[in-house]
Amino acid sequence: MHYNQSCAAKGNAYGNPAKGGFIRSMQRAGVNIYKTASTYEMLVFAPGRIKEHFHLDVNGNELTVSYTPPEGFPRPEWILREYSRGSFKRSFTLDESIDTKAITAKYADGVLEISLPVIAGKENAKKEIVIS
Image 1: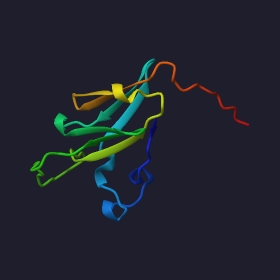
Image 2: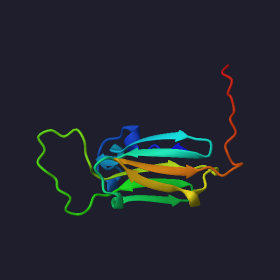
Image 3: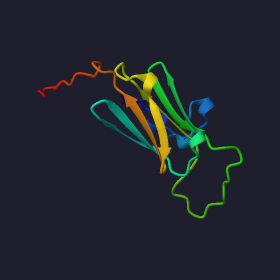
Image 4: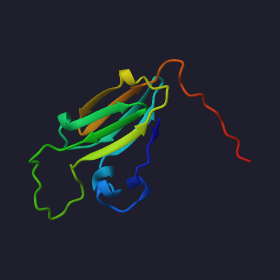
């Protein structure tokens, strides 16, 4: 499983997505991923969001996790703003070892927990690379 490095992650300038830029909120939700014996577990840190406004889609071997706030979401005049509850979109490449039909997710305590089951017998073989 791999994170698809977006233009935001590469450090390109902000801009209009239609003109090759990206939405400033692309990196607003931090993600941690860890492996268990039978799954990859993805934790998307997104406090203050509404569960029904998250979207998870699998298209081929790409998992997209996104959030869009509801229409009319209040936007106060900030004095100090270190955190945003705005929209975001993150994409991840899934290898053939992930059972995409069995992916599950739940949102609790500000963390979207996504479980990506590994198909038994399809785990990637571990290989040590010798540095010369």
